[in-house]
Image (cartoon, rainbow, N blue to C red; front, top):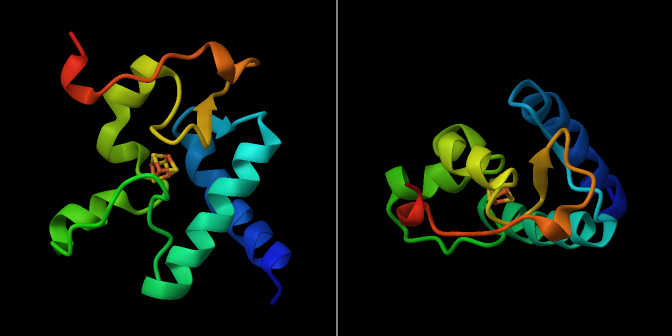
Length: 109
Ligand code: SF4
């Protein structure tokens, strides 16, 4: 399977999961492409599509919370931002992802 086919496969795998959580892929096609490419690298290295923007610690319980899509683990935080941490996924009603604010979980009221 070539890189494009692998990215397509990841996309198809993620779509029903994020849809059920109220999210969709960001309309920023370049960002989608970049994130999926990085996830493919991590998938080839670890056999798991880990988050491309969170470092792995080597502690299994912590790292398993960084398997994409990690939305269920961080739902309240991501719902507040209307995007996931990387910006790969946004709320279904988002048309312009550039206006969304990214802030750390600890800064939630
Ligand atoms: S922050 Fe986004 S891209 Fe990263 S694992 Fe979570 S859902 Fe996937």
